[in-house]
Picture (cartoon, rainbow, N blue to C red):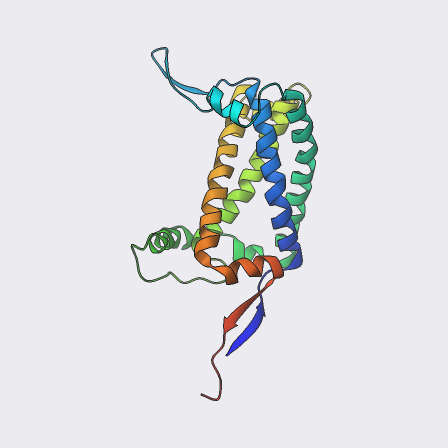
Length: 222
């Protein structure tokens, strides 16, 4: 027998679906800004072995000569990104959702077991509640990544006015490197998250849209 069970609240779903396009726009506009000072390479003994974004990449996505446009979009959507994250964190605190979300002392070990299960190297799935151990670690990490992005972003946006924040981030250049690394982290999170959603199936995806999932319930008469 099947029944409909509530899984995700409206505010959780609202902030989740807002965050996806907002973060995508932030990454896109960040690329427009980064193009103007493309300095990160892997260089050994004066020989550049790798540039993160070659010229053909910029030409393919029509990125060159759009610095002002990138800055306008980036600093506009920054506020929406911050507010959306702020409301989500407040909700998790006051609703008690943080208990389901934060990793516990077993989460890091069980997260490894979840990975082995997803790679079909382990048959048994570790115990899980609303979120499994890997989700707890990943979703908590993405919150701290968001905080890090805001702080490093403000440090490189206003390095003179917010000199104390820039100093706490290790200076302008270190803050920019950290901001770049966090952005790369978001891209990897997106890719892994999408793969996980596909593997989890339609029922899981539907619950993030509607807030409900269909579960099998044992007939008490049996």
